Figure 1 (tube, rainbow, N blue to C red):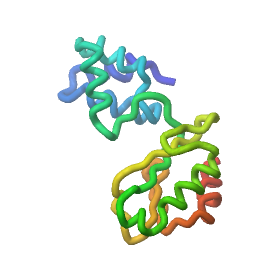
Figure 2: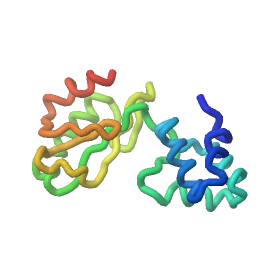
Figure 3: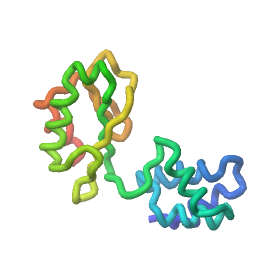
Figure 4: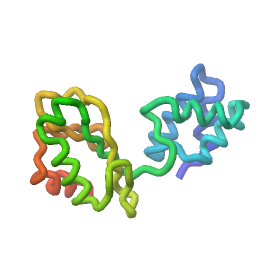
Length: 148
């Protein structure tokens, strides 16, 4: 696993470097570790509160542990009408967690998201940004089996 200071330090002299460093951390870990925010504050010579504020302001960034596979389900009106609630129930049952949680083995995190631009195939989930559409509770097990 890469060193936080090494990853963040690579962006010290880059315009917008703090945000770029957070993107790099998220690519590496799938989230921004809290200790990495402390390292960023030191490297960019800013208060920890400001470093934390930047990390938590942008919805793309996630501070704290997440699974290897981030499963997001669209919560827009078209997906809702098409049965997203039943798909959520199937995901929670299959994984043994609730929305916003991560499985004990660290493989999966469930999150809600806004429209993913796949309205022709509602309801839709993404797994690490790969879309799966026309979902039913019955096809959730098959999809998740690809990642287990």
